[in-house]
Image (cartoon, rainbow, N blue to C red):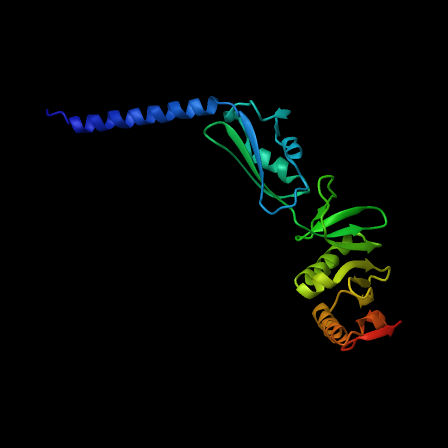
Length: 240
């Protein structure tokens, strides 16, 4: 019987490859995490720092640094980091040379809420963010008798303002009144804008922009102290 040496060679090579792969995997798993690298998405305000994130990279009651790579639960670590209210998304992975990398995307605040009881941010997804000791965001200030149920309406109002370059530059703060109506404060002219309830916003802001364009062109904007947008198809103004 003729021996097929090519077949035997193939089996030997395959066996050697499997052995080397298993050896490499076991050796790699036995390595320890020698360093933790934390990277924040470019352009984010640094509400967090490495120290805050390191405190979240905990497993078995201690930091993952110097723990064996084989026991690291990446899903658990990502869940820990995502539990922080400043974090929108995270990716954590191990490298062959023993690094644990955490890539953090922080939430983007769009308004600072100053209620009767506390102060906090809301982000572009209408999520609540605590204030940070590391950074203060320059965003619209929203004050008044604000409850958790009001966040959705405030998010709609702020998002509508931020989508318009003119309104974004002209409006500096928002006040929520006890009757669930809103008053806006301007940068130029220092007028109060009585917006009313959160309804028909696009039409109201269209009327407001037309008013500003006219009064800024003829330089009469300083003659007014109040602009009322609550009435349909008209802008009612109060002179000084």
